[in-house]
Each structure stands twice: as structure tokens, then as C-alpha cells.
Picture 1 (spheres, rainbow, N blue to C red):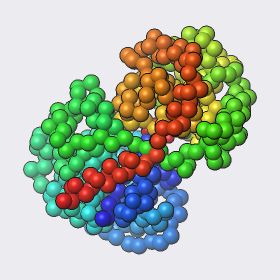
Picture 2: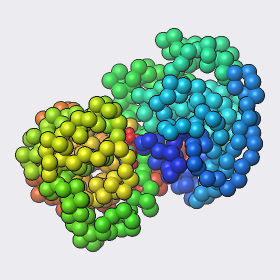
Picture 3: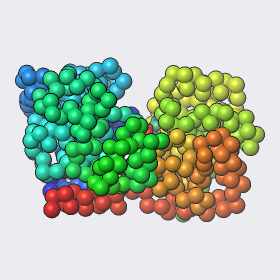
Length: 445
Ligand code: ADP
């Protein structure tokens, strides 16, 4: 069976968050299960390819040419679409993002010939609508919602002009949303199946609190909704082989973990035990309650290692917190893969106070690295952390609840058991990839 992934991000080529991890790892696991998988991505600057070819597609009524780069990687064919709009420093955050990804989606649609087109978040959610209009050579479409907070809204007239879709698509039952078109809504409406990256998130986005305005649409489509949790690439995230670590370790030989903890404390100039944070610094991630509870957290004996990039105001606040608490709070601004690994391995606990969390990957990495997560009881965090056994869940989203959770973690008598149970948990893609496979087969029946 041929499956084609279309997405904005994929490791190792382009990653902002968990979406990139998923699109990198899941196709490889599906390929191991015997699926013939192609992944289509924008050709971001500097990505080397094995072969190149030419293609064309229609945008705003005119023919556009594009170069298509191709590589083969661990059983997956990867196509990079050479569009000038994607030759920029970043992946998102530009005023013309909707236009860029509509162009990308139209270019992808012109190339695709597959059994299942599997699209991810709003960036490629136009494809199910194109399929409905008879303009996609795919027998079925699947939309995975990684984060419903981002939706891709735009002016209906312009979108119709770019895509050539008939005006009937701009209807409240289809892709119209309060006077705009909404690409996430288009995907939710027209995809043959919707998956969310955890079952709890699938239920949450049917409520006004988490649905970001689309909860009614999700409720209407709930019969075709299925929650499949993410895994992580356990070859890449493996404390027994991780080249970024001071020392390596596994479940039966934990000496290396102690060395990693000592190295992290030494490198960052922090007094152990350390609570780690590896996160985008945005409202979703809820770290403001950590800042509010900081004095009490430090009183408890914890130090804090924060690694993250995001809103300038939040970056500034963490830089200030570090300046005000030398030896107890360390902040590294930006993305830093090696340091992320050292924090996962060298911390005594991993703080994940997200306001909402579709699945979350860092808790899975924490479990694998013997670093119990301390997380807000929401979304995929609920589905993947066994409270009191493999980590600590707290609710509500307040600094008081967080501090109570930190106390439970600090004074847990069964800490070693918690670490062992966490490391024993299967956080690989195996089970979830098989579930996607079952879904594809059902759709084609
Ligand atoms: P999200 O996709 O919402 O950002 P996830 O928990 O699903 O959150 O995935 C986050 C991924 O990004 C993890 O692999 C994490 O290690 C990584 N990450 C986040 N911030 C950084 C950073 N500053 N440096 C390196 N890796 C980071």
C-alpha cells in the first residue's frame, strides 16, 4: 500500500516542535511494516538531495514550475518541493504563511499518486478539500491534528483565486469560518479520517476550553476521529548510545546517569538536584506557573535548568530569573540539541506544565532517560504518564498544584522504582505505527 505524508516539518531537515519528530519517525516505522511511504516537504535552504527533477502545478490560474529534490532514507522516499517562498531563515511566522503553504499544498497535489494521503496540521489540510473536488489522486485522506491552536485562516476570495476551488467550498458546512476560510476546518471536514496525537486530546478538542473555536466542527466529525499516541525514535533517543552524553547508561547499569547528573550540574554551575525544562517558550507551555512558584521550588532544594526559545518576553523573563538566582537557575536561550539531551539525562525530574498538550514528546524522552516527568494532567500527558508510578501529574494549572507535585516527587520513597517503571515503558513507535496501518487498511476496504 502506498502512503504519502505531506507536512511542513520533518527531522532531521526541519523541526520546530513535535510535528517534525512525528513526520520524521512514523514513515520509517511504517516502511518497516511493509508500507511504501513517500514524504513530501518544502525544500528549505541547504538540504542536499540525491536526484532532481522538474514538475509544475497551477497557482492563481497560472502554471508554476518547480524543482523536486529526492532522497531515499531508511526505506522512505522523501521529496522536497523547491518553492522560492521557502528559501527563508525560518519555517513559520511570516505574514504570507497561508499563501506559502497553499502553494506548497497545490504543488504537492500535482505530484501525488497514492492510496492514502496523510496530511498534518493546517499546512497541508487543504489536500482533503482538493480530494473532495476530484483534484487529488488518492483513494483516501487522513488528517492528523498535532495542534488545533494553529488553523491557517485567510480571505475566502483570495483562497478561491489561488486554488481554483468552486465558490461552494466557502460555506459554513465546509471551509468557511466566520467570514474567513480556515484550512484546519477544511481538513476536519473533508478528510476521510481524523487522528489526534492522543485519545485525551481528541476528547478535549471537542470542548470549548480546548477546541480553539473548532470544537463544534470536531464534535460533528467525531465519528471519524481516532486518538493514536505519538512515540519517539528510540534509536535516536537512547541513553545507552547517545553521543551527546557525558556517560551512557541503561536500565541495568545506571552508573552513567549519576555521571550525567554531575556533569550537568558542573557545566551549568547548578546545585543538584536539577529540574529540567526543554520547551518552546510560548503561552501553551504554561511555564509562567513555574516562575511564580520559583522561590518555593528553590526552597525545596531544587535547581532549575531551562532550555528554550520562543516569545521574546518569556525569554527575557527566564534570563532575568537566571540572573537573580545564580547557581540555582540556569537559562539557555535558543535551540540546542546536545544540551537538550544532557538535560534529559542529567535532571532529577522534567517539568512539563503545559496548559494544553496534544501529545507531548519530552515526557516520553524523560521516561526513556530515567528522568520522571512532573506534568500538568492534560492531553497526551495524561495518557502517557502513570501518576505516582512513572511520574507525577498535577492539576489544576496553578503554581500551588505544581509545588505540591514537586513535593511529591522530592519525597517519593519509590523514586528508584519510578525511574525503573518509566524506563520499562514502551515509548517506541511500534504500537502506534501498527494502529495507523490498521486505519489505512480500513479506509481502503
Ligand atoms: P511541541 O511540539 O509543542 O513543541 P513536543 O513535546 O511535542 O512539543 O516536542 C518538542 C520537541 O522539541 C522535543 O523533541 C524537544 O526535545 C524539542 N525541543 C523543544 N525546545 C527545544 C530546544 N530549545 N532545543 C532543543 N530541542 C528542543
